[in-house]
Length: 111
Ligand code: AMP
Ligand code: ZN
Image (tube, rainbow, N blue to C red; front, side, top):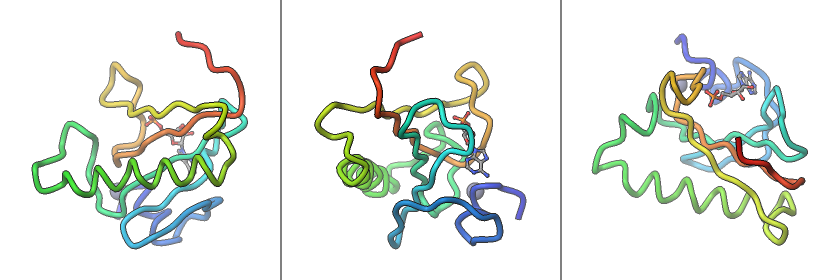
């Protein structure tokens, strides 16, 4: 199994897990760019949003519900936070396992 995030799911690679349920895992980004920088991933290996299918729609909906809950636990719901998917080369995607970045804990710029 090559995928680094699949190895995080199987605990072959350690991570700072902040949330886990049947379908999702969330852990701290190893190179944070904000005080709160969490990666939320489905346990199912999907390379990127560009690969989702109609039958994934409930899973993707659940990903956002997990993000909302994680934001609440991380205390960023009130002040606000940002959710980002990088898809492909131009967006700077470096890990080919779908992941939602949750950023918060400071005023975020847009660049
Ligand atoms: P992206 O650039 O959107 O593909 O995001 C991949 C993110 O995964 C980057 O922000 C990396 O810092 C993060 N990352 C890569 N390997 C690990 C790891 N082993 N544990 C935690 N975060 C990681
Ligand atoms: Zn994977």
